[in-house]
Image 1 (spheres, rainbow, N blue to C red):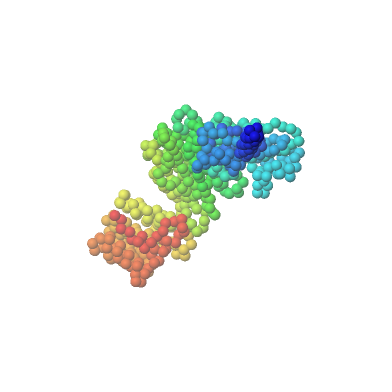
Image 2 (cartoon, helix red, strand yellow):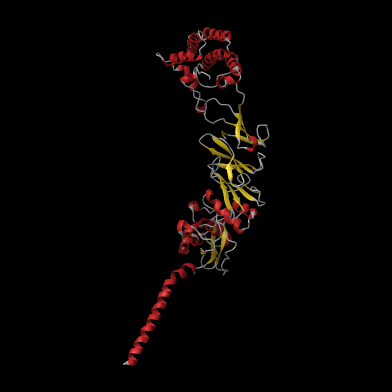
Length: 512
């Protein structure tokens, strides 16, 4: 009996061992199948992300995470020093091929002797809309010739689908190539986002630490748009991080990288262009390295239609070079009569750029002379209304000024308004004789017009006590009615959406 009991106990111990071995094999079999089908181990480095590794290897984030379930952590972080498995797409004999600009399935088939059907069957994820191939993309070329498993280094880089994703891909490439700007330039050119007429790559020491940052501006190709979308990055060599990304809404053109305003800090200046149905607008941006970070170095909005931009030292109100921008004409009939202008932006004492002047181009339009006179009138206290008097007299008397809009009585409307304002300007100067003479001229030359009536109302209220508040209150009452006289302000409110509005309160303004 003892012998039988010992035999049974021995058999149970043997079965338990077999079950344990089977359990262990079953437990580890998924890892073997996930990572034993061809690939290599990669050690995560500082700054890596799932997206940057995907861009570097040409393997999608989903495939990487499927092969490395234990590396999926909270917030999808990757830990420096962690090892993840990079699966290879191809199977059997063959080799990887990096798509170049101009490649197609047919051209690669002719070059390799592999049919298009076989190439596409080996690369299902490379079959895109219209059967396009993307420069920089890797595809597997199945071959009857035995080849060694492709070495994991240096890996090829797939071209990101979206321009905004190039930051991670450029970080990865610069890291892998030890900051090789020529390799970066070649890759970006191959991806079609960098060309002679589109984009720039510059290597400059911006932070002053002796190491060169890389400034990159890229532009989408093949869009058929007048200003294809673009973006701008500044990449820093300390671990190759993106220190700045413009997140641009339009085409990007780098104007300068250097100490533009001579304040001892490096600047990046660029023009961003966006186009609508009939007009393109350009905005100038400046960022400056402050010693800790990049900050915007423009106080205000520097935007203009069809701008021509140059950087030049033209004023002693700022240090270094000023930003001179000329343009402003909107390409739409509904915008009204327009003229271009020039703005000068300066950096006073190295401070952020501010606008110091705005000067319009010469114009033969009577309406433009009236606009200039109105602005001089509102600023009249500064020069004793001298400029306002000069411009309103020109509007009234100069026969070479022409109509530039579509109103039937444009010249008469503008001249009667200008005569009334000229009388007001004389009154502000204390020149009662010329004020009265102007009123008489207006009433005799343009009798019955709305501004001849307004001038009479204003002079009657103003003359006794020279009270401008009382005189303008009388005018406002006349315009409001009853009966109302909306033509007094509507005649200047109907000059297109690019020009200033004009309301009842603008007819007779009291200048403080």
